[in-house]
Image 1 (cartoon, one colour):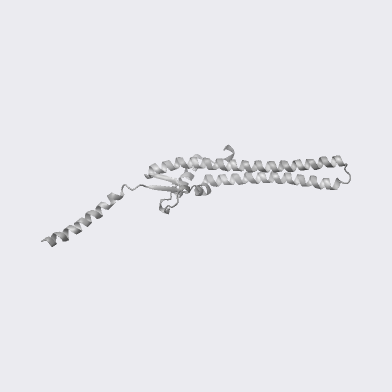
Image 2: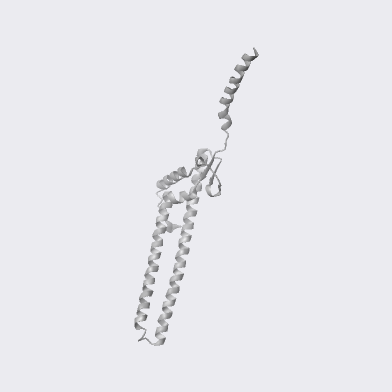
Length: 185
């Protein structure tokens, strides 16, 4: 009689454990990870901003090239006229050329700083937009925590919510009709 009860109790106990297992997993913390670099590179806002920054950089480069060509022309003119110019006039023109060269160097540094500032402002704006969307995704998805992956040493790809975030961000921008103009930053 003891054998009969044992043969019924063990399967019954295993069945209860099997049925109770989903209840134990219900309180597991849901964590998400976001690759902010991927958001910056592949979101609509990131692509628009990158295109605008590249356009601005080309404009700046063209401006510098034009100024360099002007200096080269002045140098060529000075070389051609060097024998007929008096020493004082020649010295003035050489000084003017040196001043223009220094002006170009200063302008180049200014352009580089301007581009860095624009890029920084773009990243800041996208991060602010993304933070708002992350909070909404976190509430809707029941996440305990969503963090940027630059502070994570390891995470399985199954908790990466970057693609969902990018899709939501693109939809939000499309609904707003926002063209992500870098001149307003």
